[in-house]
Image (cartoon, rainbow, N blue to C red; front, side, top):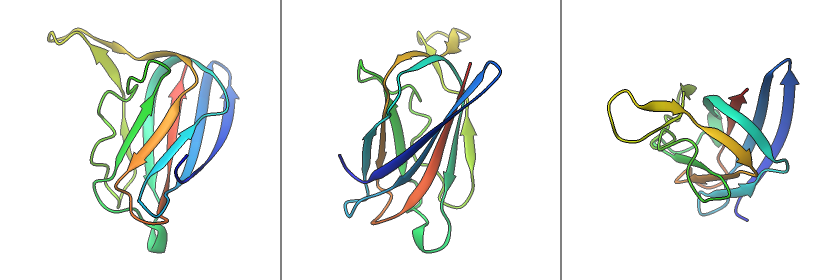
Length: 129
């Protein structure tokens, strides 16, 4: 595993959150498997970069893979800003206009961060129902 990732979970009513606080290794990467199997629709993915000395390199990349090795963010974690929080509503599509649906997961997930710089950090927060 590359880098470190501290994971916390929060459930309020029907909404669940997985909060991943990551720090990259010398190569600028993180590769970490979540400690709990997640089940539900991904409603929103939030990216919060650190600031100051641990601010990641601009345009760093985040993927979250399921056990089928597919990115549940569907590419929305590419080229993340290092200066402001950002959010996306990941979905899956069959390539046809209008045929998008929320991504559904029922697996252990693996967080991967690339190109963040040495010992840089941030958070990824998944909201699901």
